[in-house]
Length: 250
Image 1 (cartoon, helix red, strand yellow):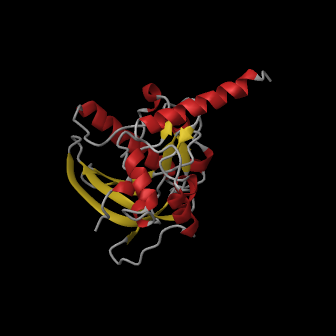
Image 2 (image 1 turned 90 degrees about the vertical axis):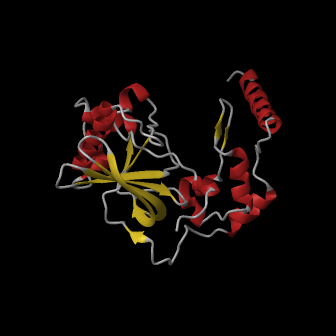
Image 3 (image 1 turned 45 degrees about the vertical axis):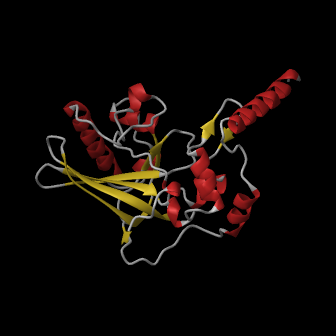
């Protein structure tokens, strides 16, 4: 190995850290964050009777191949009149990270994870973002669910927001799902193992194409694939929301 490479990387990390600080961001988690993190023993739980149990639905996540922080799931239901009910679940970080706490304040300052060639500066501690608040397969997690009814003409005729318990049935990746939809690849094994999930993906893609063809503004909806030109076929209604700095949903 070229001995100059490790030194260059160290220099890049130092520069990135200095730039973060110069811009008023926090490159490192404070002692308060570490103390709070050590007191968290498991995923969030809540006995609120208004929280719906949606763990039986065929939820799945679609992210980049290397994603470990799964913050969003989708599922749909075909209605009799040709409309489709779309449900998007976003991790309820609020349930575990209370407003005004050290972790919340860090997230409030940085607002997002910062990606540089030398180092990633995560908005939330990795133990939270990839484990305790991540919507990992087979794990029950609290989420905030947006439920929308999309008419055959691509208009959104109804929308509600509520809290629920969800369970990810399959962790999928944009490229593999897009290849299958375009008939140039096989159904991903994780989807094949869940009866009915193939029909779910087809239905979600059909709604995505309906929205694209209508040319209607999608507001907060946006796709986040690693290959936008190819993978915008799937998950175009994805909602990017950080719950760590918002008020709890009643």
